[in-house]
Image (cartoon, rainbow, N blue to C red; front, top):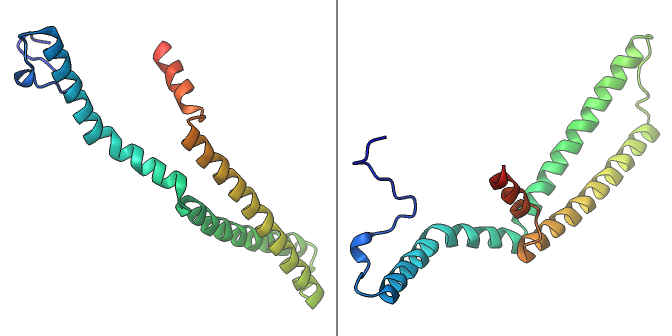
Length: 144
């Protein structure tokens, strides 16, 4: 690396810093850091808090739950048909069998959606209170 190239990772504009007194230089640096925070980090933080206080994440996951459950039940039906087909049998397509499958699908959907609501609520509370595990794991990365 050549000496004529300097990379300033903090984005400090040296032309805006008064150097007549230590207090003035510190005040100018603090102002620049706060402006950097407002422009770079605050929008991301506001978006994160917006997600933590809205139902957007919950609604998206509930839609995925419905799709995943439907896919799983369809795959299960195909698998059962193939398994029974090896013995020359066909699955029971009676009204009772369809009703049982419908009830099972309904119970599965309710259970998965309740677990999702609880998980999203826990996640939102951790985001708002700062109890998430990310800061500790990020601190661990820096120590290695």
